[in-house]
Length: 162
Image (cartoon, rainbow, N blue to C red; front, top):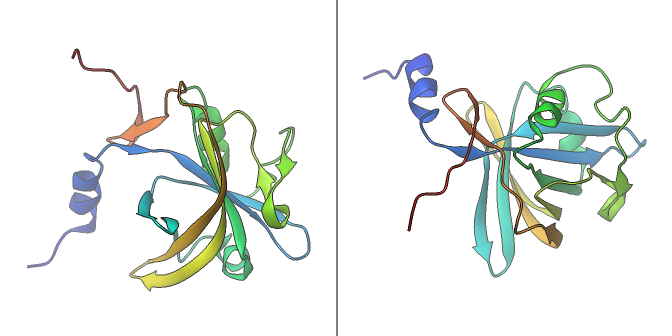
């Protein structure tokens, strides 16, 4: 049986995900970032996470050469930031007040959480590359409401009564 890619995509969109932005910096100082909802925890000991990038991504070559990157878990009021980093082309960092993290990686302000990571492993998988990373430093705001994605659009997280 052959699985129709469009039907698979629609089916997978029923799974609610958080929204992240992954950033890194090239050896010549070029800053890149992508929006990704393919993010997950892997291990607590050692502290490992994973995320993936499309093999056709314009930023892939920079991520392939990088040994450090940051994962920013977005707040529910950061859909505009998510959209900015989901686009190809223009400098996505224009007018953003970034700081430098491990390995010079650009750190975005005011996210729900930020994980500064070092490369642990890279694995080709179909039309994506899976990155496994060791969390070296982290910062989080437990009161932040996360930006979530469902059915091809941003959604609001609602608490269920106890």
